[in-house]
Image (tube, rainbow, N blue to C red; front, side):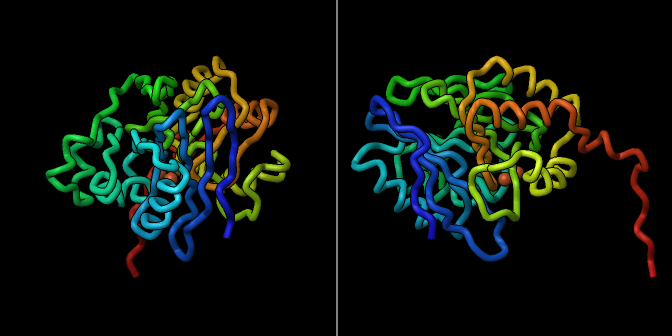
Length: 254
Ligand SMILES: [Fe+2]
Ligand SMILES: [Fe+2]
């Protein structure tokens, strides 16, 4: 099994990628932890299959510190299915798009913890992790209608959620951008909404100083050049409704 990877560690600020605890049919998913001082934020903690081990690893890495936030980029099960367990066993506050606050409880949210599930306004927000600002960036329709990413100015890591996801390769850092396209092109063309939305995102993130783009599935883009390659690719990608020219057809009955 893989081990926890340290992506950044300076001045009491750590960015950690947890080991890959997933297996079987469940889609591979990355769990990231940001620690500043004695507080932590877990990003997209995942579902029941990995809950025990992600929680155990997180608790160990915090070394007695406090899990302050659960960041939920959107409402998919690979992100929030185990949110009740996280809220019941920690004192963390969970943040998800305000669009999904009434839907998440259908995964089974105990009344005792409901007040710790908070809605993120459409325009995004800033969360302070023991004094370190984390930018919660709007990235709606990439792919979910209420979708956010996290930019950490200290480590210069952009946690991009499903945007940048790749499936099926055996590396966790992209070694060759062109050779990597085969693992992410199909996903982006089907799951991402349109080039208009992608360009809105590109225009926003071009203002950021980025060292790593870390998606929720698959490999990271490491280094400013590789991150730029990904952003440039997004700028010209046709996807989602752009490719819907033929409309829908009724299924054929036999
Ligand atoms: Fe998703
Ligand atoms: Fe996902």
